[in-house]
Amino acid sequence: MSTPRSCPPRPPLQRWRGMLTGLLGAAAFALPGCALSAIDTLPPPVRSALNKAGVPASALSALVVAADGPAHERLRHRAEASVNPASVMKLVTTYAALDLLGPDHTWSTEFRTDGEIAGGVLRGNLYVRGGGDPKLVLERLQDAFMQLQDQGARVILGDMVLDHSAFDLPPHNPGDFDGEALRPYNAGPDALLVNFKSVVLRFSPDPVAGVARVYSEPPMEGLTIDATVPLVRAACGDWRSALQARFDDANRIRFDGRFPQSCGERQWPVAYQDPASYAARAMEGMWRATGGSLTGRVREGLTPPGSRLLLEAQSLPLSDIITDVNQWSNNVMAQQVFLTLGRLNLAPGMTEGRLSDRLAPVRTARYDSAREVVTHWWRRTLGTRHAPPVMDNGAGLSRVERITPDALGALLRHAATHPRGDQFVQSLSLAGVSGTAARYARAPGSQARGNAWLKTGTLRDVIGVAGYVHAANGTRYAVVALVNHEQAPAARPAIDALIDWVAAMPD
Image 1 (cartoon, helix red, strand yellow):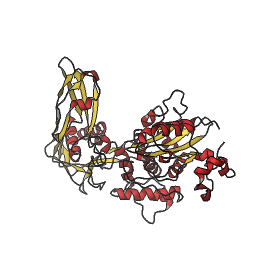
Image 2: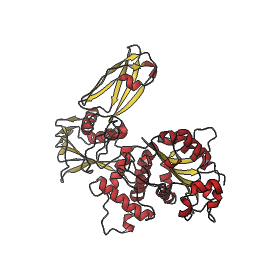
Image 3: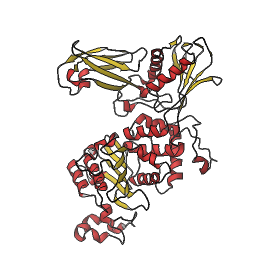
Image 4: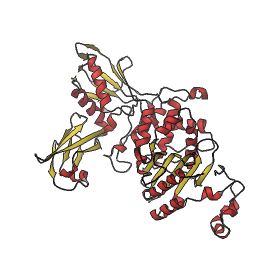
């Protein structure tokens, strides 16, 4: 049986509730039509898992409310608390983008010139103007280069000029957040983001030669990587540490250790140690690898106003992008989407009707403009009942971002009835099946497996989920559960138990 969404508070009793409940029972505090035990009491499996993890119930903020129709609540526990959501904040970024830009929105990377093409030669500079494409990976860059060469621009008698001016960003040190500068998740956004600024190292054992052969992509101009590393007969274990990789020189990657033969073939994506030069090195390496020649150099600069368009490379549609963001929690892609919202021009005289149209990015993106747009969208879309979230970079990779379960519940309920709501739901990972939520609902017989669409979030001291759970009673619930505590990672079983409890709800 469902419970009404809100029950009027009783401040005089609330102060003494902990003591009096033990004397009088929870029913003494129930108002007509308000089963407080159904709302306020954590399910026993959840409380048990929290106790086992050494995490107090006060560290959990949770809400379970019907996603469709009247907002019947089944659980409310500190749902008004403003807490760090970690990557769950990506729900705000992706839903705002879906609503403002539309699922078919694409980003453009323009290839322009101030010269002429004749006889296989481009006499002039090639300008590459980034438009914020969140997924300009090697395959798509290679395709663009081959199209340019098919137009006759096989030799560039000039420079390749990389234009990053669509984003105006502060300096970014990938090690500032958690000291893990080589982790790809710490890569910074860029209007011309090439392959997530990452190098993929592949190790292939050759037992006859006694070495593991090292392959890498993309080809990076001026970067030398050791071609082999000695094999060792040992358990695979922490094979990355065993390599003793050296990333201290921007021009070379070395291996002073050994590669365990028992590991078989392995891949190691690493953020390039000099991210500021990544695009130039990768673009020149890829240009030459596809058969092109360049007499000048690759440098940063602005595209001149009178340049001529040679090729406009379109990104994947937003619907595909938000699936990567939400299912795999890609931080830099989320920031690219967030900054793209900052390019929308919210003129003072713009009406709500015009705002709801798909808007083309028209200004240089900054984090403050992105926050402005999302805050404006939040108030226009969700009203003033729930304060807009405190946003930093829109990805949740932050210690300052804050939101309440109440606000997330309102967003999830709004999305459930949105004309493009299905695309938003399908962008989430499926519990026990796909994406980052595959780690949940793994217990034998879990009814949540395949029935819960979730966005997960994890930081040091933070863990959480938010999304939709289809319960056994036929109701779809919006579920939010966020833990902020120094032992937060240990509380994952409690969140798992909550998801299972919702999925098994019989009435």
